[in-house]
Length: 74
Image (cartoon, rainbow, N blue to C red; front, top):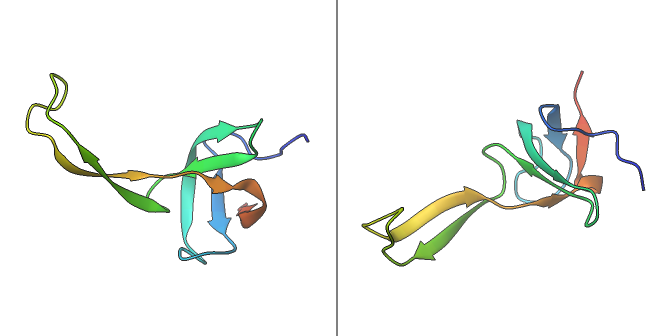
């Protein structure tokens, strides 16, 4: 299925916990029909200490949302 939403577009969330929020698309996954939106659908990820993040701990990051749950804003 061809998607009309591309990286950098501004979209509004139509369903879920973040209903009504507006954000910019950071990534698009065409095969799974999902998008990652800046500041929307935040999850907490527990990480071990590593060279990249020596302290470890709990990081917050965006999780993908199905493309049917967002609408392009003009």
